[in-house]
Length: 145
Image 1 (cartoon, rainbow, N blue to C red):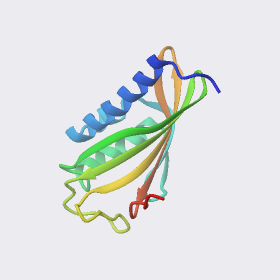
Image 2 (cartoon, one colour):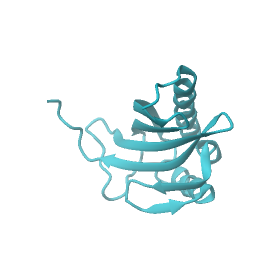
Image 3 (cartoon, rainbow, N blue to C red):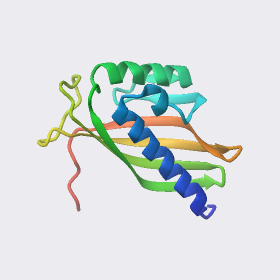
Image 4 (cartoon, rainbow, N blue to C red):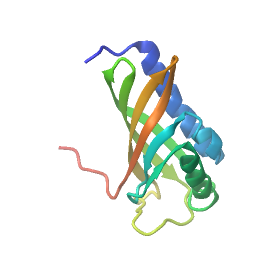
């Protein structure tokens, strides 16, 4: 395994922070800014979409309906470099402020919805791009062992 480069770690952390900021503005274009043209996207319902345009459109629809006015936090819980130019990021996400939730999505007692996001990132020409985006809803927080 390659040793993580602090510049790359910082760039990936910044990418995730920029996505959270775009979400909080309800900005699908900004949320999709670092998504590759050929990205695969699996949402919390297991629906699969391909391509940047589909990713952006799906999030535009989501921000206009279920996620309208919501706030999110996103933090990289684990980052693993498979190669110097390929990384896998496990991201913890939370969403608050939802007025209604779709069937199958549960909020915790405090009204916060949690998910786990796995990103596969590829570095091209010095910039990191999301090439795979897989989101899984947390139906209840796991207990600590």
